[in-house]
Length: 386
Image 1 (cartoon, rainbow, N blue to C red):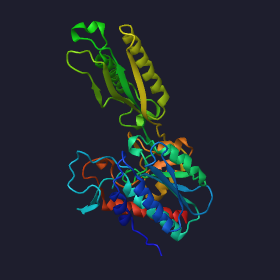
Image 2: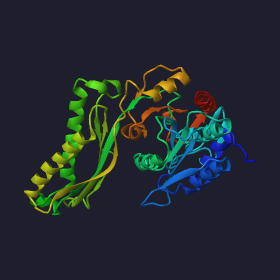
Image 3: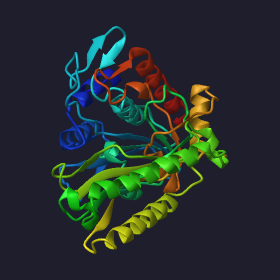
Image 4: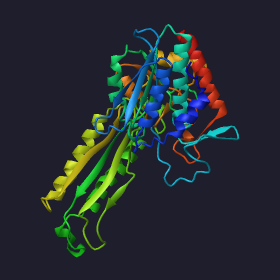
């Protein structure tokens, strides 16, 4: 008879796989698939087309019918490079009522609970189906969710999705979306004493960054509209987090590159911010080309995530509130895969153990209390599905 692992044993195993987003997650996926198979659960997988060393996994337990519940998690974690850890980040360490390790909160704690719940659903029997969806590349823009959702359509279509990002087991029903560009300003090098005959990519790139600052000031000063008032801050904001360029102080810079991104409130679309960005880049490029026709600005979209909008008749939210007894309203400014499930027509809610404040930090941890609360949540969910 196959061994049934506890949630804690599953957490230990999952954390032991160093599934940093830049690296493979196949050893973890292989192990989970084999573990589920040992309990009579057949899992499918979606392999990332251009990086076959990454894969997503999905599985179904219960009647082969529509209307089930999906437990959604991601398998990748952020790097530990340069972080000052006091414990081994890829080995769960117990200390002072906490379980330390990379991903314990974000979000292998939930993944372990979801795997445990799926096996329990098979063992106990359920009359409403339970599914699991474990993605890749969440930490680099939730990019693995759309192809995973598409691949899952070989299963009976579920109704409700619980995305287990750390929320302290509170129901989160809305979050901001985002779109980010890598901007490459191509200038024309000249000696700095002849600056008027060249195009400094840095100085023209600064024009675009100053435009972002002006937009932030205008958005902050405006009265929040619609759903924007639910969020902190209550507006879409623009951010530049990295910039590179230039050869020497006395040369007009040939190149300047920087990230340029938006956190978009529900009620606004990514396309409207794309359009504004493209128009501004085209306007600046036209001015640059009046000096040197070779000058230009390239925009490469690196990330996009639709906003996750609150819904009045959200059965996933209702289910979570019935289980937790929590009726507080919670909206966040970070992004999750819930918005991709919502766009695909599912009812979705974000709810998982642990605090987002320790995610991505050195000595990331989940408390015993939160992990145990997560297991109680899964127990109550299984009772409802039975």
